[in-house]
Length: 272
Image (tube, rainbow, N blue to C red; front, top):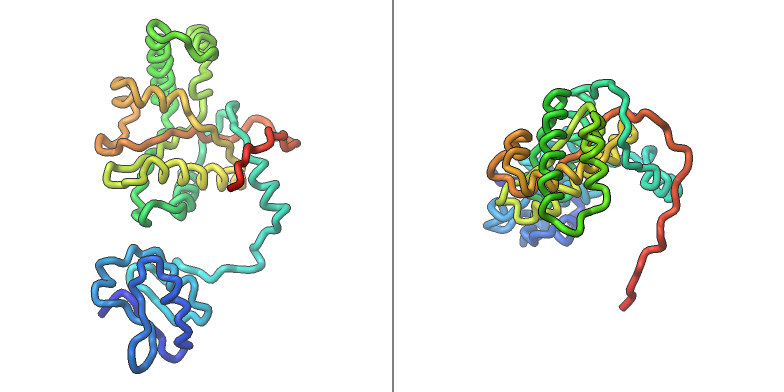
């Protein structure tokens, strides 16, 4: 039996699924006109689920895409354009966290949501590492500060914030990871040819969903710089050795609540 099953009682033979298939592996059968996969369809199918999702009649099922995990879109959950704009503009970089652990199940749910982010070829190869041990997060922060100190000795000019962050660390103040109660690292193996893009897209899904679960996030750019350059930091974080694409994100409960949506510079657009 192939990947695709057609309920002939529901199918209208309208070819919507055939036209939508991005891999062009569906056709309408000669004779009865029902959709089917071409001979090499099983090998070429990337499990995107478009055929199942686009059929307005519910006539298709796919053996590698669980139908019980593929619900109908609920119109009552739609949000307006205005709500969408506010939702996206609400997102802030949070650096001051309550010293309250983030529940494991909440992090798991966010990672599951992030797994719906698009990935090149629908390969879905992004992997996740969660660090919630305060001692380990402090160790990683310290190693990052030491990497910054070494950079300060050899690089000119420096980013202006480097000396301030290292001085703050020396005085016992952590402005590297801001004492976040959790650190989430998304990574992808070299087989993910678009991993450099897949990782930040997944993290963006993660952080946008996080704000509706009462959590705040911040992209840990200093740590990412250290991961790129310091073997000691890489060893402490322990990203899988075969995963060259990665980025860390701080996660926790925000100490404060924002009440305005700050303006941004007008985008530079070239029309051609």
